[in-house]
Image (tube, rainbow, N blue to C red; front, side):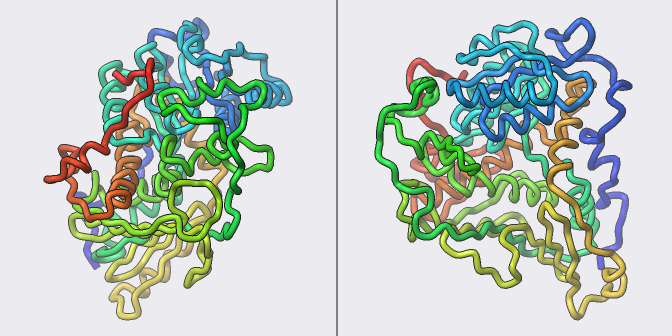
Amino acid sequence: MKKETSANRISRRELIASGAALAFAAAAPNLGRAAGANDTINVGVIGTGKMGRSNMDAFAAEPGVRIAAVCDCYRPNLDRALKSLADSGKPKPKEYADFRKLLDDKEINVVIAASPDHWHPLHTVMACRAGKDVYVEKPVSVTVKEGRVMTDVARQTGRIVGVGTQQRSGEHFQRAVEIVRDGTLGKITKVSTWNYENEYPEGIGNPPDCDPPAGLDWDMWLGPAPKRPFNWNRFGVVDDGRWSSFRWFWDYAGGMMTDWGTHLLDIVLWAMNQKGPRTIAAGGGKLGLLDNRETPDTLAVIYEFDGFVCTYENRKCTRQSADGRGYGILFHGSEASLFIDRGGWSLDPETTSRGRETLFKIPPVKSGGSEQHQTHVRSYLECVRTRKRFISDIEDGHLASTTPHLANIALRLGRKLAWDPARENFIGDAEADRMLAREYRAPWKLA
């Protein structure tokens, strides 16, 4: 087993310095030019769907935070947000149907961008330019170049832009990263990530195009995306508790590859200290489901990084797995393998491991996902006050989103691609490079 040294050891302080939940009242007030007179952080929420309300409630639960405004182009979602705040005894915020009016509100310090994925870049960039800090949901973009613009604008404007990749604030994820980096697992040559479930055969169903419902501005919801007839699955907001199905249409998102792959691959990039793969190959497609989604129901991806291979698999038509785990990350080392998900992590030593006795003394860790989200929000708010880099900075979110985008491009082109992580372009493939950006529908522009 590799001996731990000061050069390869990552300290607890290094891991959680930007994410630690320090005493809120002790944090130095520095909210930027839009600070409230009493140092209250005034938050505006753009997108009050399921994830938006979850973020809103988490922010509202923190001391010194007020939800000052909510915005949605779908009135029923806006009403749900108002009810949630009222039910928890919070003051009634301002209401907006057009996010541009919220950004014009000088009272707002922080914007939560929890809109559909295709809106994340515009909402983030415009909020930064309006002098607001931003908490944006993942994936941060639909294309690679959008994420780079978001990162550059955050740096140019000096705004604190954090990403909702909350696993980074989970203490057991931080401990797992230490184990991966300190050599406990030996030489890591393979990392596996996966999501398995079974929605066969109906999936999300196949509703016909129809008129938009009352209370929805469909043109605003589409925004920079191409003009399309209204379809309930494209819009995706239903009352049966599921996550919105806009995720399964290329105009707005990237399927499970970006929806869940971003979370899983973010931890791989972080633990293995990588900015991106060297090559990407992907196979699969819509092979079983009878619904009207466009993104794959079956997908297998192979990434080649410097020194190791990483795979991502998604299945929507069978949940069977060798060990019963429906999703997760597995670091395969020469001395031991480490499995991790939001519930905890565990080590499985190799039968010939020289450090077998030592490894068995490291017990499995159990944790939970809900506290990771709240800790993540609390840590972000501390960074808003101190102006320190957040543990899930926009650049981290950009790289975590880029890696899945590359797989989708390889899948759609049907060939293996070579990638330059430093230049953020493909090597010798102009056709693939054109897929790093997308055209915006007028009058929307990302600049």
